[in-house]
Amino acid sequence: MPEELQVLETPCEWRAHDLTDESAWTEKLNESELEEVDAALQHALSISSDILDIDRDHFPLPNLQKRIHQIETELIEGKGIVLIRGLQRERYTQAEMEMIYWGIGLHLGSPWPQNKRGHVLGDVTDQGKRGEDPTSRGNEIGQVAFPYHSDGSDLVGLMCLQKASSGGTSTVANAVAIHNDLVRNEPELASALYNPQPYDFRGEEGNGARAWYELPVFTRWSNQLFVRYIRPYILSSQRHEDAPRIAEQAEAAMQAVDTMTRDPQYNVYMDLEPGDIQFVNNYHILHARTAYVDNRETGQVRHLKRLWLSTDVLKDRPPHFQRNTALHWERKRSVSHVEIT
Image (cartoon, rainbow, N blue to C red):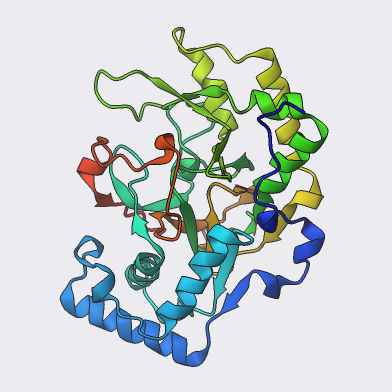
């Protein structure tokens, strides 16, 4: 084993057999907590119907916030996944559900913009883009399965507004276990992924900026593991002539990671019901979804809202994971509005 490689954060390393009981990762809101959420919603709406006007103090959760803090700690220091269940989707309009999601999210962290349009609350639904489009992003692509990947923040959250007619199961894979097993069994491959890899900006770069960037898949920082892996973006970086070519050893390592993410021992499957909220640690968990079929005639169209959040529990990050408030994405904070009709 190369001297610099280490097995990291074993308390966060799980296998599927450790989480066969859904209660291990499901937080069911009780009646009093649901009443508190509803009261917070009404208070927020009395201030403004614009999500961007609402901060944490405008969505008071005096009792539930203690549980949310425990969830936040579990996301960073524990299993890295949680499903919050109990919200009654039929009770609220889409706008009200979005405000609830925003308010709960504010108690977990600070929202990050997700694209060059500055969306701090995004839509994950079929928006007519296809994977072969080099400017498409995962939240815009519908129907097809999406491979395991991570996003661009500490935490990523999804709230289910509507299920597809069939399919669309959300799946997560433990990147800590995958990293550690590579270190234990194939250290040369693990070492290759500590080197920077090229990523395609997919048209999201600033005016006149370079169309690609570099990040390692694995980073060790203060004996913590940070993972960033978006295989389609790495592959599409090769369309840019000035982007570095993917090294042979790195390609072999990424193929190994892809194979491991598809191994059921690293996976948990979640069928999100309307009203469910999923949060994952973006540095420890890779997420994906199965293929699905929408039926617009019956209104069975898969539609989720997305948050990217920074968390106060994580005290230290590598420089390339520090939030860049000067980024052009930050200067256009807005909310995505997609309504399924």
